[in-house]
Length: 313
Image (cartoon, rainbow, N blue to C red; front, side, top):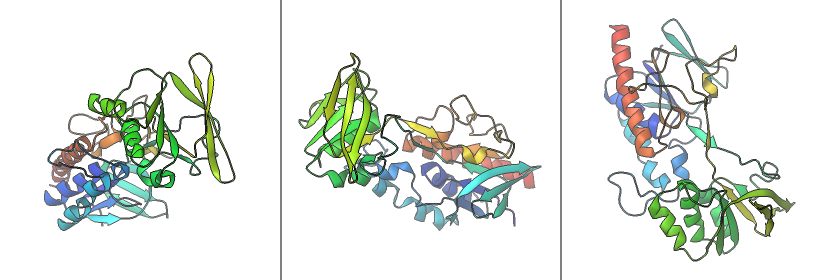
């Protein structure tokens, strides 16, 4: 059996694509997502900018009903890790980690991005042992303790605010003296008493013992070092594009990507390969917002429906 559409990734883009393709008439639509659907946003402590959603709501709560809505119209969720997507003629082949191959007439890919490592000494060795990229996942372990947050964007500041409700004190280390975040978020940071800003500074080394992190050394632009004893360090410095599934046997990419590793698409989410559509954080110029990713999924699904109808009729 050849699928009408294979969806790679189960975040907001993939789930919306699943909803629109199945409700729009495509049959045999499978979404491949090795973990729980919902994407990175499920780790966010607070969502206040999704249209129509008011009051305090977590990313997990926001995404909870999406899979059931999609499955209502026939979307099938396969918990398999896709290692590669290739194409021969008009048929795509989905290669999974367990060696299975599945064929499809069209593919919508939305594998997103992953938190980027900062690169300071001790980060890799102590990752998961006091160094974290998810405040909602690990913040509880530092209840009534001091922690350090590294970064200056919306995510860093939002997660710092979340941690400030749990921890006795939160230090925000940022390499500049201004933040790249929403004005309202910056104002909340400035008005939170147990948050201390350490600006024009970068992490030099995180250190610890067999139990985990015990402190971090910070260096400012003048070369002065500050040692802060904390059991937890949270890093939020951007993301790397998850484009590995597009890499072919010869090392080239299935479709065109830009210098940042993002997939090039047009306004209909079409890539340089007919029948292949890219969505969400992995496509070029992505705003990296849930509402935008959902919009990408809807656009890609409508494009996929048109492509498959034209291909088969």
